[in-house]
Image: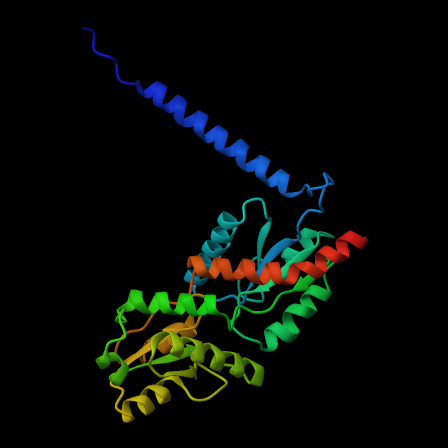
Length: 286
């Protein structure tokens, strides 16, 4: 008998290349079919999605928001996804919008509550650009944000089960950037309540600047109440000065910033989709 020959390296490479080509063709075809309505008419192209990051001198922040942008692209192939910063990093948001020209776009702030940047800075930059834009709601509060906070706490060592000892002695300080805007504080308190419901322990919002209490003050208050296992949940989109400042006060565990978690990408697309309906109406009437 003659033994059958295994596939050669050249044959395997050919098969892999063919599979990659077929996947690429299928993906492009699916993207094109999304532009066709059931009646056969071509739908308007979806507005571009512009992620609006604050900006940071910490180089990890730029890497993080780029990774989140890439994850959003993976979840929604064919959707144009761009990045713009309010300050400190390039591309700056006005430059990103200028490059879009008259292309319709939805701006999704990578911010975790309502505040000056969401209410003033971003809308003013959008109004000054030639692009037809709409500003989506910030990322918080929302259950998907709490999903990410919970996941990051588990990664840091938070007990996965709500045992009696954790319920009796555990607590969390939700560390946020802080703002003088009362709506921002209300959003952070809402996120803290949602996280407390998930964990079954007290969650106290605290701030790195511009608002009270500070993270250190919140930790000491919880300890005085007999909560001697206090974790800090980092309610920051990416690493930076405030996140590092709050982490240094941790008496026990501290979670990583939210970063490019899968739930964060889903949340970005949720905000984009919620803001998209009025844009579709505008495009249909154009």
